[in-house]
Length: 108
Image: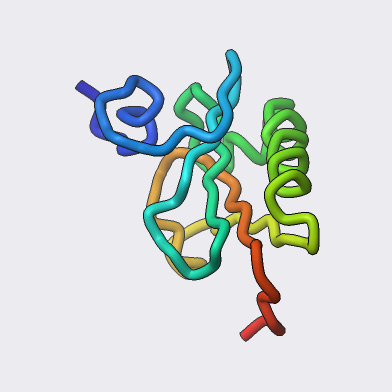
């Protein structure tokens, strides 16, 4: 049994609406609903946020995020990553947020 929520989603031990998956990347709906489209793009392999951003896998995660964001949010979207507790990172598994589906307004 995995202790990481995202690893449990990858292993199908935790429910999630999977939007895309391949051998390296999984995309699923975020449980938060701040915007009409809120997705998480993660590597299948458990990597910390720092490990993901320092790896070659980030290019694949970014490419998938761009493809699904363009498909689901033709008017535009944000790609967001939180690194560390001051940025409100709550999951240890490296990930990228795709947020869109409506006008998002200015940054706070």
